[in-house]
Image 1 (spheres, rainbow, N blue to C red):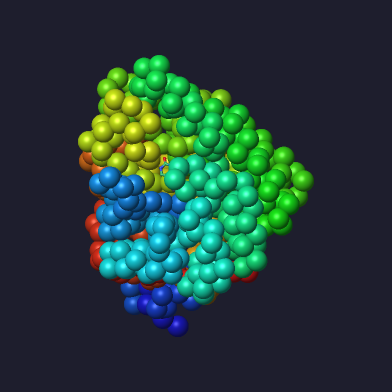
Image 2 (cartoon, rainbow, N blue to C red):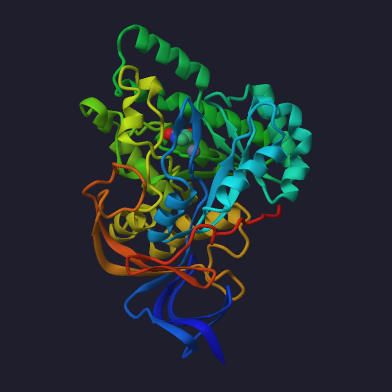
Length: 454
Ligand code: DUC
Ligand code: ZN
C-alpha cells in the first residue's frame, strides 16, 4: 500500500514512548506507523527525531492594546515564525469590546485570522466585567468551537471576586475550561502609584510592583473559587515558586488544577530589568521575570508534573513601542517574543541538560496542551491524528538572534542563546510548511479548529 508521504527511519518521540518506525500519511492524516512503508513522496529522517507538531495554547498575535499599540507579529508573520520553530497549532484570543456581543467579537477575530494564518489555530474567549451580563451566551460560543475562557485578575478586564465566581459557574455549566491571568490588580496599581509618585520610574520597579507572594494570593483565590464552584482551572504564565506551591498543594488534594510556564520564566531573570535605557524595558512582561531560584523550582515542577504545559504568551512589541514607557515603567507594553524558539529551547536546555526526558518534552509542548484544550487530533502521533509532524535535527546548532529568527520584531530576549537541535522539516496536515530553512506555506493555509467540550 502506498501513502502520499512517508517519513522514513526516524526516531519517533511521543509523550509515552521512543521508537524507530516509518509514518505513512494519506491526505491530511496519519494513516500508518510501522516498518518498511513506501510513499509517493518519502522524507528520510534517519538520525532525526520525529515528533508531533508543537502546540502553543497561549499567544497574542496583533493584540490591540489601544492607543495605537498593537503587538507586532500579525497572523501571518507570527504563524510563519511558529512553523519555523516546529509549532503547528496555536490558541489566541477573542477580546470582546464593551457593546459587542461575544459572537460579534468572535466573527471579527476570525475575519482577521483566517486570511492570514499559515498554521491551524483555535481561540479562547476573554470574559471581563462588561461580559458578565452576557454569560448566558456561552452556549452559542461553545457552538462556535470555543471551549476555553480567559479570565483576567488584572488590567481593564480585571474581574471582581463576585464576577469571577459567576464566570466560573457559567464556564462550568457549558463544560468549558477557565484559563486565568492571576495577579492581584488592586495591590499592583497601588504599588505602581506609590513608586511613580516617588520618582521610581525605571523598569526595575516593574517586578517590585508585582510581588510574588501576592501573585500567589491571586492564584490561590482562583484555585479556591474554582474548587468551590466545581470547575477545572488552568493558571497561565507561572514564573515564581509561590504560585507553583499553590498549584502543587491543589493537585495534592486531587483538584483539577493545571499550570503552565513560559520560556521567559525559565531562561531570563529580573536582573534583565536593571539594564540601562530601553534595554531594561524590553523584557517587561506580566507577571514579571523572577529569580534563578524560581527557575530551578519551575524546572522541577515541569519534571514532576506539578506544571503540565510550556506555552509562550508570545506578545512582541518593538523597541520603539517599548520605549514609549521609558518615563514610567507602568506604561511599557508588556510582552516578549518566544513563539519560534520555545520547542527547540526546551529541547536544548530541558532534554539535553537532563532536566526533563525526551517524552516529557513532547508531553509539555505538544500532547498535554492539545488534550487539555480539546484540540482533538493534535499534539500526538497516532493513526487518525492530523499529520502535523516535526522532523527535528538534534545535531543542528542555531545561535538565536533577530537574524536567525523569523519573528517580526527587532529584538529577541534570547539573543546569543545556542539551540542544539532545531526542526528541519515542519509538516501540517500532510503539507510541508518548512523544509530546511525554506518556508513553503501560504497565508490562509491554516485552519480554524472548532473544539468540543468533553
Ligand atoms: N502579559 C504580558 O506580558 N503580555 C500579554 C498579556 C499578558 O498577560
Ligand atoms: Zn497572555
